[in-house]
Image (cartoon, helix red, strand yellow):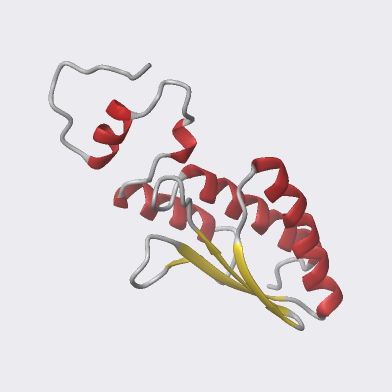
Length: 134
């Protein structure tokens, strides 16, 4: 069953809403540029090293640097449990104490609320493992 609308949708988000099955979650719809910018600003308040948009892709990225491999692995393990729970898996790369993360929602072809929720949790995990330095 699909939703119906009276007026012609004018934005990408409105068009996506109009043709999505009613059972599909709003968290898997792509964020528009204003929503994405606002979400990235909110995320940046949690850390001195902010999330950024990926050039040439509809994705966000961040590199975490921990004290050592054990902290990096702990962060990745905690994030892996969340990823399985959310059924939303990050693209990441790890070398020793560094974890490079890229988030995008492949189902919608862009950054969705799922990515923002995961990034928020990742910030909380990182701050638990390695509290912010003043």
